[in-house]
Image 1 (cartoon, rainbow, N blue to C red):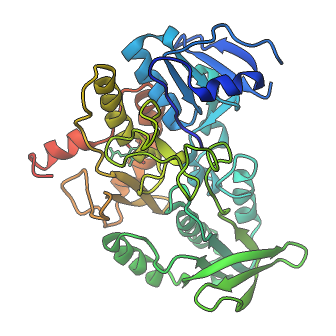
Image 2: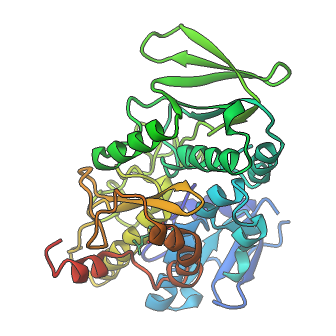
Image 3: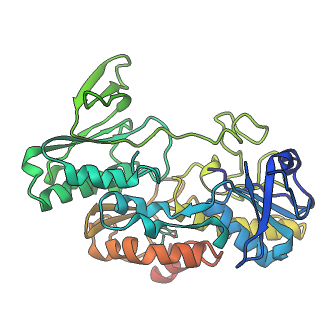
Length: 396
Ligand code: UQ1
């Protein structure tokens, strides 16, 4: 989940310390940026100094390297990323529900048990197809997670699938969440409660998964309001959203805040202590939901921040916390949640986005993957802010 660490003039202290671990450096054929893979021989480095070092080739890291290449030339940028493959994770909700193939979600990094992991996302679809009768249980852990809507999206899709295949009458669909609310933004939570009631989905708030007894097909949840009190749910199918946290490389380092996240300024994305370090995406302590849409909006601001700092000027544009969560409620409907740091809806389109819509499903399933691979990762998409202003005649 590390997305980005950058240095202005020289290699960071970070990179120097990490050189011993670098085994291979190679150039990406399409961008010319050097990509180094950790944990692979000691044939190190084409070059020991880069003006800009990007640590992590997630959505934020790749997006910023594309932007930095434009700003300072490919020969001045290096990316450190251990994985050979990059995945478009927002589509895994639809892979888990059989609406998209897993192959469509991955590409080699160098060219550019659950829905939350590539090893298990196809298991969800198998479990759904094999479902006969009983409880289908979906969990949300007691930690921050990537895209906080995803744990319930797969529940809505599973419900839709069970209805489509005539198995719903024999199923209880249960969503056990650690949170005290169904969704953090009231406008969208109100709509989701309507969906849940209409489709007879059971929601248990403040329920945290603490044990899975796979041999007995039992999941044990703790009531967070009454610590120590547990409840066992038998399951025919269990979709687990794993607990998540800061990366160990950042956590405990001088770069982290107390909770272990990269400690950056919430307006400019510059590190709060080290002015030549910047952050974007999941690794940061920005108080907003961790999504690709957030990365998009952050990348435009961070690009501006870095270009100003390189000219010895003050950063002038502020990140408003924009993030978005396309809440997939069936195989053809989406509620498009968009909001800012204050939890205020910040909707792109001049329509009520809290309503379930087909148009938004097509945007999520068919438009977004293109925007991601060809817009965001090439540093050409900085979020929908300009379109929002246009659609609302400059009023938002
Ligand atoms: C977005 O910018 C983005 O990043 C590419 C997503 O991630 C895949 C999204 O899901 C959404 C909704 C946006 C916002 C874009 C529009 C057009 C509302």
